Length: 221
Ligand code: AMP
Image (tube, rainbow, N blue to C red):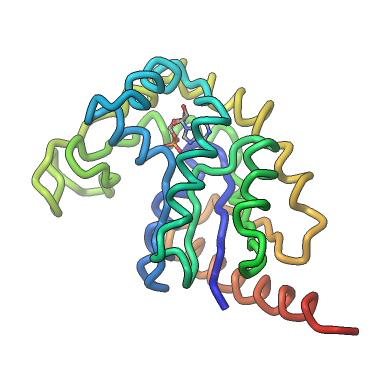
């Protein structure tokens, strides 16, 4: 049975870090639409060129483009044992498309990572990412990435005014996904305002509980 997981949460909730660790642990791909778009921008592809301005302004890239990118990615065989989606879906239209894409696969598990706004703004303002491989700098890291040697920089969309815009867009366009998913037995919300290892443990427990609920729901009554 594949482990098909969506991590929901505002910018700075720790989705990327947690999705990355969880996916490694389970040996399934982490699919970060933000990373895919940043790679497209870096490579100067047509999608990257079209997305750049919206990303820099903290706005969402169009549903059509995002759905096509994820549809193509989920078609690859490495997703058959499962995947962790980080940054997708971000709108109800994307969530509906995702349900269609995974029709016939294991049910989607959805985790919402909840963090107060003031903590998010503080975290994102202080965040540094590797300009080469995209890894997040950890507390105590020097100015260069320990895994690839690239320089740590601030993401162009992590400045305070863009962060506030991204949070506003999250509330308006992405928060409604909680209502979309909440009634499913495989939905869980968890407190992300705790140390990363504590959140990681809570994620493991939530996934185990959601998997039980999914099995229960799939059992004939
Ligand atoms: P992230 O790294 O997930 O914070 O994404 C960075 C930026 O990429 C976002 O602020 C959006 O501009 C764009 N983006 C990433 N994923 C999506 C998505 N699913 N729908 C629309 N825009 C997206």
